[in-house]
Length: 604
Image 1: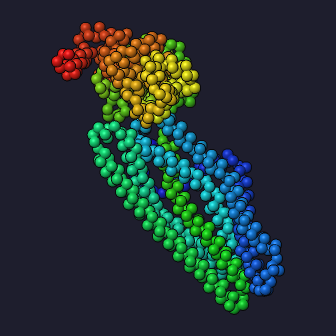
Image 2: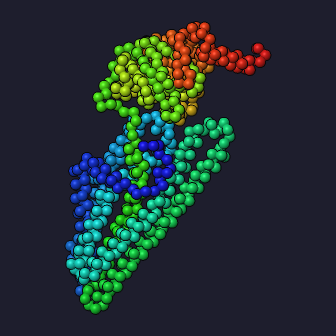
Image 3: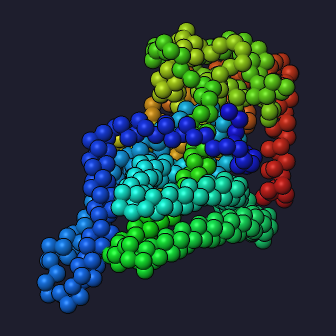
């Protein structure tokens, strides 16, 4: 499935098979569902008996107007008990069924969350977080709505309509039963037609809601960029433009709802009026008692209250299904990087990494890597350098199996990484990325993420190795210091050292350093390089570097240009060759000299 877009709300029929897919969530609690249905039946029987009890009371007074003190206490108590029972057993039904609905929301939310983590990196790079979060939120709420209202409102309402029609048919002229059934059919047909008509406005409203929310999230996540360019007013105008679209869509939604409600009210009023004309005529002719007139009126009111609710339920179900479409669309998104059926855990005997004639392209028209081959012996270090866009970071993504190679193979200790489980593969590899993004939690949490459940002593040891211990101890809250959204409360160097501490705590046999010191000043860089060199001695290390000064001591350096290996050797050998590496080195030395001159123009 291609990444979601706003056009998915353009229209089309709702997939009603979604309803049947919810049955397994009911089957998990068969006992609760059966008990809830029992309470439901008792509540409906009590509700249908209330107008009959009211008829008996009115007829008693009609026959003996002065008999207030001799009205049977049992009849009055029974009337009250029936009314109470109707509400009480409905509440019991909801209480018993609540666990079923909430557990279904939990199960589906977890299922979507796990599925999203199984999808490839390309899917997430093309998605918008704000819209995705709204899809999940509305979808899970829609699931709960469907479970509660379809099972315990639509079916019971239809049963209640049938019971009332049967009572009117048995006790009075067939005209009453036909009037009831005719009005129900007319009401239902109008509700369905009008709801289908206005469903496009629901979709449009959701689309505008997603756009405005996505815009807000993107703007707030890029808070610093907004401030750098002084574009607060521009962002507000863009957000307000989306809100204006949402406002217009909501107005259409509300006006169409008013039309629907007015039409339903007209049908109800006409039906009740017709029934009252028929009943009043029979009372005047002496063919019906006053109690029976009251009973018919009570039944009509009792009938149209749930029927009106049924109209609301249908509207809400259509809206819920519209929302669930997006949620189930996420579940149907194909997992492009999946474990094979007989995948085995990766067995690391040293950590030798081999790239065999690897080619890769995110877009078939634009190849990134072309026939890349190299070998990193266990416990050794290989540095990858090259200009931007050469494919350096793609090597790390392929090693982690965020994508599968387009051609060739990647081996770890002779095992093709496509034949082992992704979980075992990623447990064996640690990474210090160029752009470190932290969880909006504490420093301690972010470091312990490398090994959840690690002791505080191990966390402090990792901090010491990452040259961050003194900084954290000086903080008033120490490890409990909040880092802010995406770590914005910390400097780039501090964030990067937390990432280094995190991977040190993980203690993997294979290490990937993706320009791991790019955000550090010269002094911090030297300290970190010492720590990383110490750690890398016993690990197979792939070091991706932009600043060549950080990898001059690497055992072997591989130069990548336009997705191809153009040179490899030690720092000294590559300089002597006078090729691509030597040119990169000369360019960076010249840049460093120019920067030093600009920062100290008088040579002070």
